[in-house]
Figure 1 (cartoon, one colour):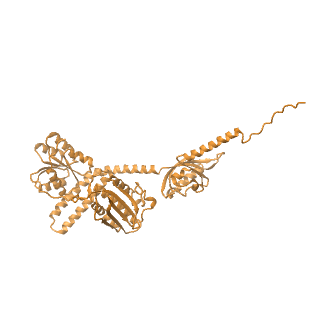
Figure 2: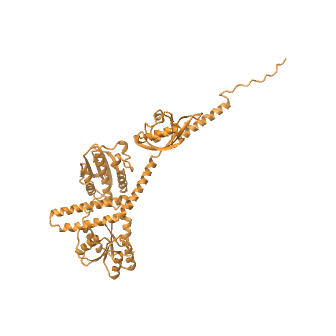
Figure 3: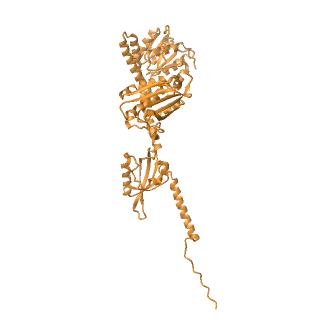
Length: 526
């Protein structure tokens, strides 16, 4: 008898069945996707438990802070945060872990593995379990150090622009009295009957010239002018910078010594910019020394390194930490306390040196402190190269020259007119541009010595009116100005046949410039 067919019994599902294999494959793919998503996310992702311990840190932390995730996991929030930010960070965490805040954003500083402070912007929210209970905090944090630095630079630039407008507005008012002080002291020095009086007058002149340099330095810093390069002796630059820093150095009992090699090459540079560089570097060394003791020594050595001029500035201060040497030339970076400096001096010096085709770097000094080394392209030395301050020679006078002085400042107008009359010139002095125009319409004149910033009619407007009326031949114009004109502005004036004399000036400089200009060929209309 045939047995009935039995229905085969179904086997239970097993993990090795095709269906479960597909589920397992998809699960692994999703897990790998999440892993890669977290690893590739541009921000650092962290998870903290209710005790402020890091339980998860994404691999991005190594790019941002130099630590591996394993070095972070198990540590506590607040251990690496800046002391000034730590309380805010912990309060931020407490607000999230207690449910007081649902989501929050904050900025804080944390230490990189190399010791530097980095600024982070973090967004965080509570982490909950399946029942909605808060079991920790999840956060994403981004390194915003560079963007904050750029923000500070922008803010500083805006401040400098405001300072520039303010300084430019008062520069004319400052330079006029300084011109009078220098001019009158020139006359008094020539008439001084004894050495004691002459020394006192020279002291007045020295202090007035220092005030001039301060005003021009403010103008240069707030509104940088284009470099006006010429052959410069670095030894003269160093001496001038040392004079400017003399008072600050003396008050802190810091001596500065200058050593120069027998064959010190000259450089093609803007002397005022080079003085600014050395003043910044000397001030940096002075403040570094003052941070550790009440006395010290700075040594400036100048020589030649292959085909370049070399300047070494050594101090016996605390030195520069190795991890800061590559950063001290960044804007707003300083190793001193907040009151010690703005962090801009070395950054400005670097820009100026690079503009001159040179390099500057920080090293360790043999004295145990810091060494700053500058290399600049050298030019062949010639015996008749101009010094930093070219001596002005008096010529044969201005006999027979007709000069019209146009100046709204009475003291300067009378001083200039009296001095030029003493040199033999026929001088007439007026206060306004309209008076000058009326005088020029009634008779010829050889030279117009005119302030560029007259109240009613500017010197430039007077010049344009004169040129339009007598295009074939017009008197020479020598403009006086208390503003700091850049190379392009001066070039425009000179292309029209005029010249510029920067206020404040000494009478010897005025005489030399006037005599030289009158002796030059007549202006060619353009």
